Every structure is written in C-alpha cells, then in structure tokens.
Image (cartoon, rainbow, N blue to C red; front, side):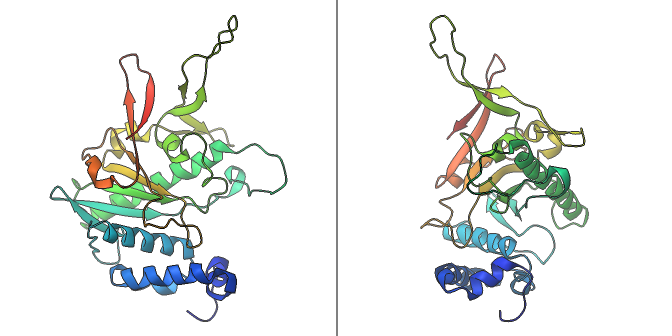
Length: 283
C-alpha cells in the first residue's frame, strides 16, 4: 500500500528496485491467502511486516500441503487444521531481539564476538510463555476448546544470530533441557569418546532470575503438540513453500501429531534412555 509505514522493512520491500522479487513473492502469497487473513492484515503489515508475512507464508504452506486451514474470526490463533478428526490450532509469532539487559545484540560485521546463546534462547522461551497466555485466554472465551491442541509456529528472522543455528537448532534447546555438545577425551590415548549433550534445565537472566528450558517436559504445556520453526522472510525463502520448516514434537503432548503430517520437512523427537541420557533424534 502506498503512503507512510512505520516498518522500514515494509518500505524497503515496497520501494527498492533490488527487492522487486521479494515484493513479487509477497504479493503472490497475499493473492493466495487474503481470504484467510483477518480484515486488518493488509494495513497492519505496514507496521508489522514480518509478522504478517509469516502468517501468510504459514497459511500458503498449509494450503500447498493439503492441510486446508480454517480461520475463525479475528481473535485467537491464526487458523486450525483437521488432523485425525481433531482441530489443531496454529499460532504464529515472530519474536524480536528483546529489550533491556537481556536484549540480543545486533551482529557487527567484521568484529569478533561470542554468540549470545542464552539471550537467544530467552527470546524463544518468552515467545512460548506469551502464546500460552493467549491460548488460555482463547479457551476462556470459548474460541478454543480446552481439549484441542495447538502448534506454535515461530519465525526467528528478527532475532539476531538466530537464523544461523549451531549444531542443534536454538528453538529445541529453549524447550528441552539440552545444553552444549560434549565429547569426552581419554587423556592417556587422546581418543575421543561418544558425543552427547549436557543437561541444561534453565537459563540465567541478567537480573539473576532463572528461566526453565523444560517446558516440553511440563504438563502445563501439554496442549502444545509441536513447534514449527523457520527463519524465512520474503527475500530469503526456499523454492518450495515450507521446505525451510523444522518441527519439534512435544514428548508430553496430550495429542501427538502423526509424523507423516510433516513428512516434507525436518522433524525432531526427544528421547530419554534407561540411563536418563538425553537425546534428540532427526526423524
């Protein structure tokens, strides 16, 4: 839309010639999913461009994959899909860098720095807490039935460093107690042992408080069946919609999403063996 816009990304994509392909891609998505969007989506994109783009991308991906999203009013989650005769709600969020002492610092090109892993993970844990509050509000209003599951769809493009993941995606470490990868070395033979992940059940904020990373082992979040993660935006996207998705299945969920539903993208599941060793498996 012409005129003023508060989101610089919206203005750049709309007006800059070198972003013409990104603009065209956005318009194609809009034409496909406009009828599934709330009445204010187009105007609100001028202020929250990535959030609205992510909602469009999600909707179009689900349409493309034959999951037939259904939108119910302008309140509550973006839409639901039917899986095994159950309404599964999809809630989208695009967390940003945050504020205050726990803000994720911007990337300074050309400088050496340590990746602020804990601050990145805090943005994911905060997103889950915020959407859990909104889920409960939607249940109290009767929009969602208390027995209906939800999938949290997180786009981390606006979190600095986050799209450039480590050996294990950040969003997995935010919801399960999986810390850094460790490899034991025999100091006599210098031979490496089997690699494993350290247990890490919490994060430390700058004010000294701690935040749990065990949400997906907590019954309070059992209504979340899975998390979809992506770092997509209109200028950085795969050839096929949703090919960028990673899915983490919630091991304590009351409703398990069948693996074949997301057979077209990366899927992870969490396991704990008889020795209480932690493992995350790529399905």
